[in-house]
Image (cartoon, rainbow, N blue to C red; front, side):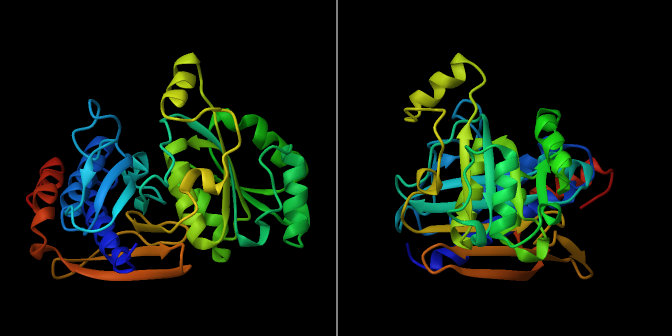
Length: 334
């Protein structure tokens, strides 16, 4: 893939973040998600790819745009798989909390796992632990190996996990061995990426979350030199058969990085909607301007770019409709 594609992709996540940010704290996650999705889909038309959405907003009959199988891009350029989450953390934005992102991953055609919309058990960590851990190990053993690999005491580890009742057994183990725990309300992609950034202070990400988000996080971690291991968790026979139908011959096997994002190049971009562990959120400034913070990375070169952009909002016509809707919801004028 051409290196210029990385900067084209980040322009798409920026617009999606700007479109959804006016809905922060307004309690309407569907409107926030719809704004991000509409803006992202419109901006894709300017990107020089022949893309097919393999992870998106749902099946064709469930989503009006960015549905699985939809073709995106200008239809000039490389043929690629596209994974998107226009607003990763819809509930976060609705409640005005941290770690909401607009996210895109792009890889060569056939490289990204067509992950079914179900839970995936996950274990994510940074470069220092690559090749040293297995999701098949008991949690106590994983923690001991991680501490040894990081030259720390187990009690000095910090583990991130979604705050969910389904994680009660894991949390009980974490507390029993004495690690520090940082809970996430939502934001599975940001959580899995966190161990690859030393400044977050997070050593491991554990627990279950969405399988599509697992693939997006794996794409990011490939660029960052970290790893994510996953294992699908079909809840019933229908979900099991759905895995088979999507080409996953053994839904219960451990998925490694190559299984999820292939062996070739990957480009990952994310823009913060609300402030998070490693990106700031959209910030409104005087003079009808807004500031965004983004990250864009490429696995082939392992180049990581943090981009702070200032946007003059009146010159972004794709945003105007979404801003008007958000203003009307608040009882004001755009």
